[in-house]
Length: 213
Image 1 (cartoon, one colour):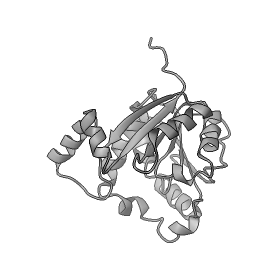
Image 2 (cartoon, rainbow, N blue to C red; image 1 turned 180 degrees about the vertical axis):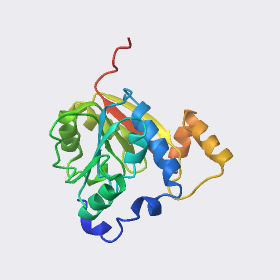
Image 3 (spheres, rainbow, N blue to C red; image 1 turned 135 degrees about the vertical axis):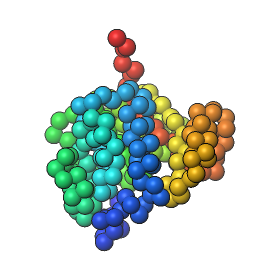
Image 4 (cartoon, rainbow, N blue to C red; image 1 turned 60 degrees about the vertical axis):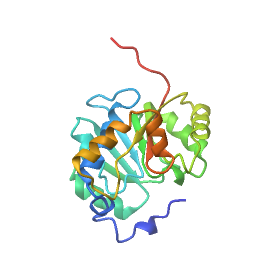
């Protein structure tokens, strides 16, 4: 279970201290939220579970999305609301129990799926209020992709798109190396080889691919 006490006194500068290059890292993550699986469009609402101080809100709002953040830590929620200054809403809530008042297009849960008391039950709850997709990160050295995919199917998400995410969190890389790693994300066997030692997948779980018109 996630403890809000863990973040006491650390909320005010959480994003700035957690990432070597917060703007670039979160911009890439937001791009994945929009594009991986069924694409999000301007005006869609994203529910960000375990949102911390709302760092992901900025690049999502910049793409015309609506943002609702939820975090167990009252300090994080206060810091997020100061950051966003009325441009989006952030509430106190436990990802295991929270339900929005109306359905959302997408739900995200980064660096926090392991806080679910029961992963399959958590996915089932998210499926009940998420219309398009659930996007989260997964460390394949910690959890078997096959096991997570099985839980998603049982919860009502039969489709799963995976994309390696080779952006270091705590180290800013020179441009050429960063571009090389981004290319490796789509390299198939090479990407999977990297994931044996470092980095994570971004996962998009959904029901079906919308028809193109």
